[in-house]
View 1 (cartoon, one colour):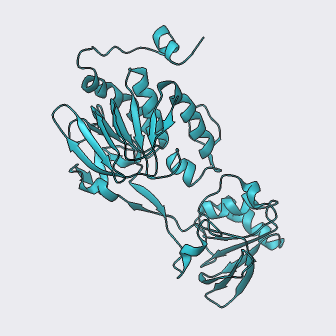
View 2: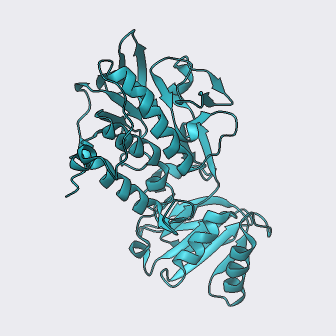
Length: 344
């Protein structure tokens, strides 16, 4: 089974994966099929990357065989798929140092966890995706108390007064998702034009016309704790929205590469260049899959990352098992693989 370990410990494994999002989780599975063990490092406090952090309750429609699946459902399925290969997770940690030797790599985190491995996979999205925050003084005191950037269970906000800020797909999806759940919904956006798909705009504006939700054109100027666990919101036109329980700002994401930029890899526009044969970087033994990597024709799709993980695993097999020959096997016919997966 998989396990989450405390920081400051020393480990040795076949492969370290930086990023525990969908591509990192599927990389565990592909490595496991080839008898390679993996440790994963992630800066978040949970497994699942962007899917679990930013859109756990939102449907994805381009995952093969799944007409619709939420970010959290996809995460849960991938965790279950990886479990037969007993991955180890190091959460709430950043990779601060990579020491590449001739036959191994030593990775150190900001919390002094040290892992020695034969290969390294960077599956860190496009670095760290960080929500753009409300440009308002004193924001920090309300975060995770009244301000949220995602939600796992809409029912947690049943009967609450909610303010949603933004004009893109996420903002309007949340408006429609909380309709009939929240007691009061206010949408604010700095202009009448929206960036969301027109069908969503039409549906939300219909709710506004029916006075089932409120719409204010403007931006948040000030937030004040009303002493009852709620927030009073002042807009730039001095409109005051009182007794707000929860605020959901959707101003897009910004990318922070963090220490990735200092690892000596070949970067192109803040992405890591790889070859398309096995997705190895300019540094031998280091690979990149998912949104963080770039190559001619690259598509930033989860399914593309799954393909990249499969081919990267083949090359990593050479580094981890230099005494064995790689043999491709189908999961449908290999009794050895089926035994590993617990198939009866």
